[in-house]
Length: 255
Image 1 (cartoon, one colour):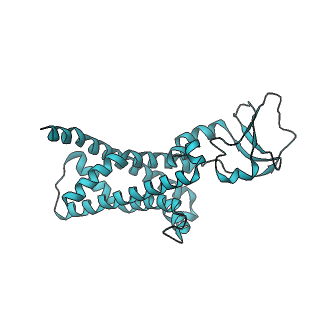
Image 2 (tube, rainbow, N blue to C red):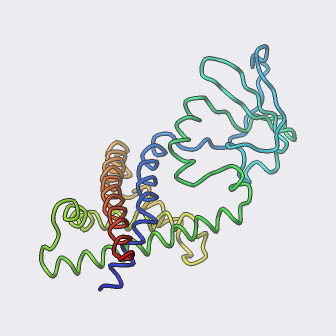
Image 3 (cartoon, rainbow, N blue to C red):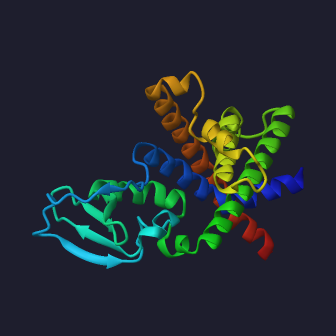
């Protein structure tokens, strides 16, 4: 038990901020997803009189391999009220992506931190995939250890007070969702390495695409937002508790 508690404590120091960021950004990206590729014919009606045109290989929004067949891309900032930027394939001449200022700003609080989607890191797909795979796996293991400790503590009777008790009890109440959410993040990066049918399980666990939620989008959205807020609050208490231990532990070692 002592070994598990020590692992959980230091796992918390390393991962609770990451958990908090995942839950908070997960809410944002549910409402404003990452801009997706869609090829449409370039319209001659596009006003280019005030536009700024750059030819690029990739940027934050086109770094994924989906655009490899279109590179280089012509990025056209229309300088309109919406801050629209369109990307035209140099190979097909089609518009393959269009983004607005609001969409881009929302993604800096949503998908980009959630996926650790730094442009240059994501440009090296193997390194980015390995990082996300290991982070998701370690986060899942850390959450499992936390649940095991919580159940053992519960069997022994109430031993915590204050913030630690709130963290303990809320962790057990929301354990199924927390484990499902974190594990589904791992599934999204597994790509069949460990789980052959991980994609279907990911959609069920991460996006709650099962009945009756799948038939009621507003209910599914409310459930995701509410559970993410609970997960965020739970993670923040973990951050406070974990980092509160560091000065105490350091003073004990110095003695």
